[in-house]
Length: 561
Image (cartoon, rainbow, N blue to C red; front, side, top):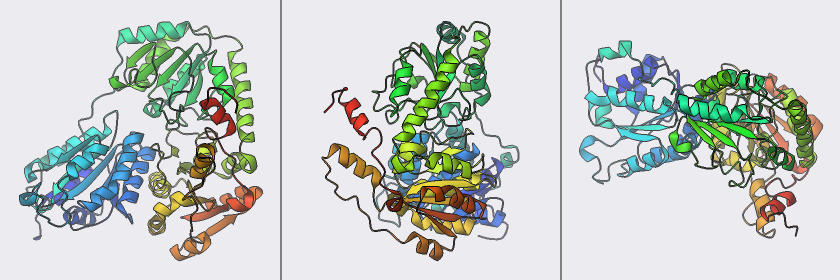
C-alpha cells in the first residue's frame, strides 16, 4: 500500500476504535491482513493473538460478558471461519454482543466454487446458522454502513453475535476516509418501554401475592437497582445460571443459582409461592430438567423479546419491555400495595440455609470446596467455569457470586471453552483476578491457549480439576447405561510439566484443606498461574442431580426402584 493511502482495512480498524473497542481477538491470515495491518499501524487497539479461532471467539464472548461492551474476533475465511463457529454458537446461547469479522475470497470468485484459497461457498449460511445475522460487504463504498449495522445489531437486545464478511480485494481497495467517522455513533434503539396495560395486569397479580419471588436471567444483568427495589417490597429471588450475581448472593433473600433443579427442598418451597416474576430468562430446559421442574403456578414473564411469551412455561401475564424499565415501573405501582406474609422472609431464609446444607452433603469429599474457594478469592474475582463435574454440581449452583458480570460459563453446556473464556474475562476485568475452573477433559480442547495467557500476562488462575477423564460423562453412563463406561478415560499431560513448558507458575492440591491456601497463593502471583486439583487423591465425586439416585427417582415419577 502506498504511503498515505487509506483503504477498507484502515476503515475497519478506525471504525472499531471509534465505537469504543479497545481489545480484539483472533489469528492473522491471508484473508484478513489488510484489516489487522490497519489495527497494528494505529496501535489504538490491543490485538490478542489466540492460538485457534475457536479460542479467540470464546475469548471475545467472555470479554463481552464481563465488559458489557462489544467483543470482537477476527478469523480467516473458510476453515478459519468454521473454527470460530463453536465460540459464535456459545455467544448466541449466552446472548453476548460479539462482532465476528472474517475475510472472503475475491469478489470475482465469490459463490462460484472455483477452489481458491480457503474458499467455502456456503460460508455465509454456516455463519448465519449460529449468529443473529451474517452480513457481507460487497463493495468498498458500503463498508462503513455494513459495519455500523452489524455492531448495532449485536448490541441491540436481545443481543447476540453478528458476522461480517469482507472480501480480500475489498479490504485492499483505496477509499477516501469517511468524514462520518469523526462523529460516528451507533444507532442503538432506546430501552424498550413496557406497555402500560400489560404493566397494570402484572401489577394486579403481584399486588395480591403473599409469597412473591423473582427469577432473574441474563436479560436483567443491567437492572440490579430495580431488582433490589422489588426485593425491598418483600420479594425473594433466584437466578438462572446466566443471571448470577444480579442480586449479591450473600443477600439473605436470594437462592442464587440454586433454583430447584437438584434441590427437593427448593421445589417444595415453590408450591406455596403464589407469584413468580421471571425477568429476562428463557427458563432453559438445561436448568429446569427439560421443563419438568415444578415452578410456581402463577408466572409473570418480562422479556424484551415478544417471542419469549409461553416459549418454555405458560405465564399468567407477559410484559414485553426492558428489564430495568419494567421492574422500576412495577415497583412504583406496587409500593404500598404489597401484603407479603409476615413470616415469609424468615421462612425463606431458613429454607435457604437448610437447602444449602443439604446440597453440600451430596458433594462427598468436595463438600467444603465452594466455601474454601470463595474465602480464598477477592470479592470481585471473576468466576469462570467450563462444563466439568465440579461446575455442574456446585460451581453453577452454590458458589457465591456477587456481581452481575462476575460469572462466565458455557451456557451451551459445551466442554472446552473454559480456558479461553478465562483469558477473555481476565483481559476485560481491569486488573481483577479471574479463576477458570476446568476439567482435564475440557482443558485438552484448548490447552494451547495457555501460551496466549502467558503472552498477554492475563491475571488468570487456571484451576484444573483432574480426574483423568470425562467425569460428567461417566456419571451419565453410570446412571443411564448400566455402568458401561466407554471412551471416558483420557491420557493427559503432567500438568506441572505442561505449565513449566508454557512458562507459568504451577501449584498442586491433593487434600481439601490445601485448596484455600494454594489458590490464595496463585491469586497473589502476578499474571497467569495453574492450580491442579488431584481428584484421584481427594476422592471420587459422587453422582449429582440429575444422575444421582434422587435424580433418577424423580425422573421416574417418584417410583423407587
